[in-house]
Image (cartoon, rainbow over all chains, first blue to last red; front, top):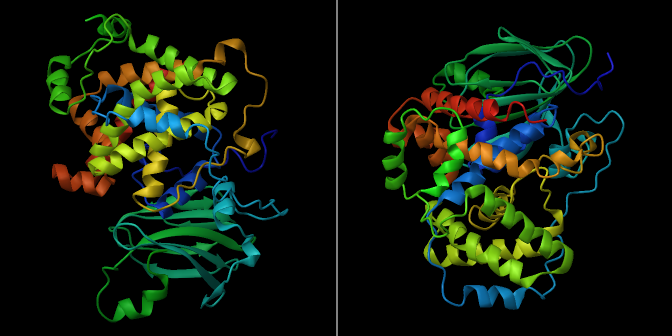
Length: 227
Length: 222
């Protein structure tokens, strides 16, 4: 195999309706981050994104022009010689530490390596860190870090939820998910997961609230809901 | 209509009689204000304007770009539900960004219109939604071209833009509708499903079908 280890290994991909939504700008920040991270594992992502963004270009070209205020051009021309803003929040210069499993979009967004994150205990062998909350339907973006061979109990999902594996592997009845693979869980999926035996598993999850679980089960499963 | 000539080389346009009134209803019809100039001509001219700004800060080229794109960006932002005054400001700011970042425009990756669309989109996300938009990280060497581009790839962005434009014209109306709601109103898939009163899975499959057509149209491009 001559291909670089990280590339060409994605077997569970998101449908391209996500690429379209990412290009359209209709995803929330958290969704954009997980989709961009997933795309960054794929060789042809740049090309697919270019095609999707060209749709936006074609749309703008075809729109009937609106009326600008009469002095719009003059006002803009007057600003051309002003110095531009300092490059606003340039991507955090975080060199990839060897062995750091974070994909470039996530690393740039976090500005930290995986070991610098404030992990907290979630359950036996599992730690969690919350990264972002917002968007429609109370979305949460977080990461899970679990030891090898850990069982994640049966749980359900609220809305459309995404889990991107960054390191190690996760297995459920739908398959084995490795670095770069993503699982899209809709509200009708109820599953248990197990992390691979060889190494720890780190994944990025985007979940939506509120959960639809009711009754005593909910309380027991609360920490795992949305994974 | 001279503008339509270019599309005659494309695949057969089934359902066009349905599609055109549909476009008109959505306000998508071009005003044909430059008769004789095809969309491809305009795309080439606009790319040249950006190059002129990058090479010698050409204000005339900027004025030409502004005349073409600022009113369209304002239209786009209005469709994204931005109020009039802010849409005007954001369109101007986006054009100012075009001036400042002209040197970053890569005609091998995108047409002028596509690049300018991404600038306006990012401005919208930043200002209106007050969110960041994580990029794919162009600094990532994995996404960089591996070798020097052959000459015929120098303008690949314009070719992609033109083919996508033609493919969009031929989309069945139900696919065109979800694409428009996604790109021009910025609706999430679930919001599109609600608006059209169709299942979420149908929205997703229509978008996938639309994307598959684009891929087919671009298949033989490197």
